[in-house]
Image (tube, rainbow, N blue to C red; front, side, top):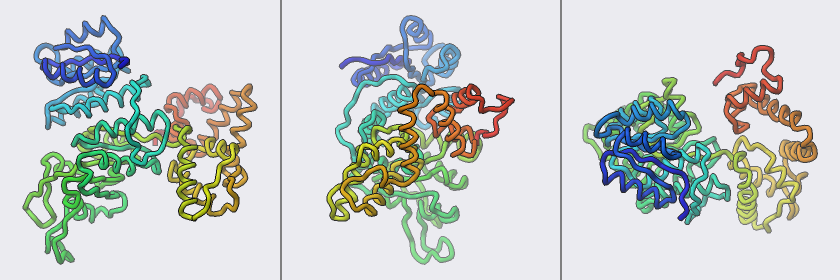
Length: 456
């Protein structure tokens, strides 16, 4: 297998050093190893390195965190993973605050290590060793992002590690959670899903942990909660960012102690289910702002999985559209209609704020309302036809790129009420890049430092 990227492993335990190197080399990465910070620095001076994995406690000399400080001072963009002893999440939190990109706890799982390395290198824009997933688990797409997601699902599904799935509403986070369950040894156990945003704050504890008879007024019989119902299967907490702070404390305790108690009871019940959570919020920002417990955030974000919005994987739109066309036509007992090239162009030009769910609903509405076996651009809603027209104008007007770029930026700002952070997300660029564009296009007004959109 051709090797990509170079990973430096800094670990004073010789056997663990060798094992981690073998795991990563089996995935197609090149590795270098060092027993301490001094040897690591020598490697870094001799050869290009794309990512560093270092133990928090090194046998002698500098600690892993001290090494990381030096590395980040020289190369702020170099991804660093800190390895800590099991249960020492406070060390992991300190390391993350100090600048680590992620952490692993001992004993290190092969799947967790490989998944995190791929995740961080992917985020940094590195080309990864190509991996073709064996199954799609009902997750439809041909883009590089979806292939990487499916490979990560296959990697981490067998492990017991907690997974956090992030992505905008409508991107299919529950589908990914079910894929993790289906691909795991827990597949014959229950998959229990809970939408935290749909539960009133005063009911969420009894819903998750259950209650004994007489625990409160109206508790006429004992009732198991979702943790208990999940057994040794998978418990999926959707919209976990909406959980009240008081409940976050109790969830953290259950995860730390691997047990919980029903309301009105003192008998601990072992927590055997694997926890998978999902959110469309930026939980790290919420944790920094005090809206979400920081220690719980790091407990949940052991293995991060991100689902990109549909606008960032336009190449998946044709295959998704065909899937939904087949699905709706079968339900209606009709032949599957085809999409004209113009209709497909319109679908691919639209930004899909509601993501896959919006595409599915639009296809269903179009097929149900349609009377022909071919869907043209004229059969689509007005906002999509406008998108297609804009795309067509752009195709024929590339010599006016500054004008087109200015209009795209203005459109994004208008859609987000001139909130720069949200507009940057819509455009798929950083807020700093957006402000640079706005300044160059004369959209920042007289004071380029003024920020009417804020960071909300």
